[in-house]
Image 1: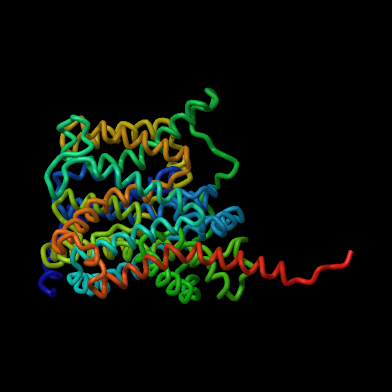
Image 2: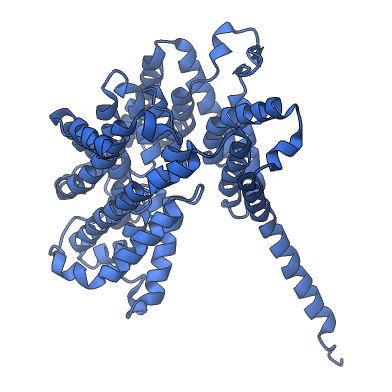
Length: 515
């Protein structure tokens, strides 16, 4: 382990890797600050263009985009009351009131301090927990992998609240698309419709580019074309606020250290669970901070503590979100699913053996995450200075037209194949149709990634047991995982049933009033 840490440190400490992290942070912050763009979309667009770079350099750039993107959403949330990313939605509650009262710079500084703190604490938790999780994950075979993947999918689908059926349908669509290609056991082709090029299946990167980038691009371009022709130049809305006011000093932040530490730990715990993500972490930490605050009446009216809680919570998920991805090979969110594809491009297969086969690269990534968290401070300061003067003056029509072009060129650049461009376009059309019917895209991408692993594990287990289904309940770990999955799936319906039953009993036992 010590040798891998030393080798990883030597691998990351090259000028090109440092430059890659800085460029990734800039790209992530700018894209995250623009409403309509997200970190997963930014990584999807950037991934094809890192092909050919050394693995550590490419991954450093993509992780920089990830970190910068999560933070960048706070800029538009505070200045425009329009979160650049879903993760920054909770920041609006206090960030925008602070900006309207002339304390925009203090709100931005609070978001920056919180982002760095949450990110560093989350990364430390990742570095500490990942090797232990990977060690115990080595005991997991194909028999245990089946209930584990089913559990991950169940968590992702059931965390969609009242949209569980839509989440299931979205996951089913991703699973069906993943079946296109060659049967992993028998070697025969399926669902290729006579096209030999489809034997390799749908490539991951073009699929996720089309799934996440194309709908946003097309919707913005159509909206831009519908605008009044006179409004061609940069547009400044009535809600746009200039960066102004005194800076927030570190001494003014220190009294809130309990809020920061608590939010970082809670955010890290939520980030490590598949399906919940940084948006849930931000709102959870914000709500708990309000309950524990000495001045809860200030929340929603311009509270520095509220901004600190929300931003610490959503950035605290960044590191721990990689734990299930790196140790189990199971992406728990759309962003980590995109990173999963980037790792595969460089021959790094996430899973329990990653510390054995690519230990130096993994620790190089870990150290790069810490460096990225520290470099976020100067990068963000330089962006804050020009946030309202430059970023929000960009003509969205031109910007998204350029991104539209990148979708096609990036998809083609992976294998120099027009089939990948067609697959990207197919995924884009699919995403537009799914959006029309309000189907979530996250479960589709994650099911697309996990279905081949699930199928291989399922069929390998049956071959080992002679087609005996009881093999999936033959180990304690498998039974435990099945039990958790059944509990998660049935908890919601049982709770609703009991609630309705209690309501009926209360109705029948209540005394009738005389007329």
